[in-house]
Image (cartoon, rainbow, N blue to C red; front, side, top):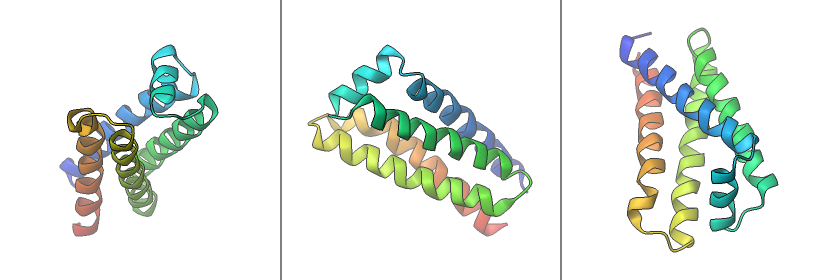
Length: 116
């Protein structure tokens, strides 16, 4: 596995471990974000669990590439959904940028995995 692939896996895992844990813990900022887009805290916690699972899959990728590929694909879908939810909630495009960027990083990771 190449250095860029490892760096992306660890970076994405760190991001989603932190965000997912915050959603699972239902910290106030996450509860507000859930309410803003019309989600219940329970649904937001489910997303948090998926993000933590994806983070684990990305770290497992260091040993089992198929798990990392599945985790990256799942994150791409989650982030595409996040962009759609933000746009449907009337958020400006700039509010979708973080989800789009980390989704693009997950896509880059998947491409790197497929290439080598």
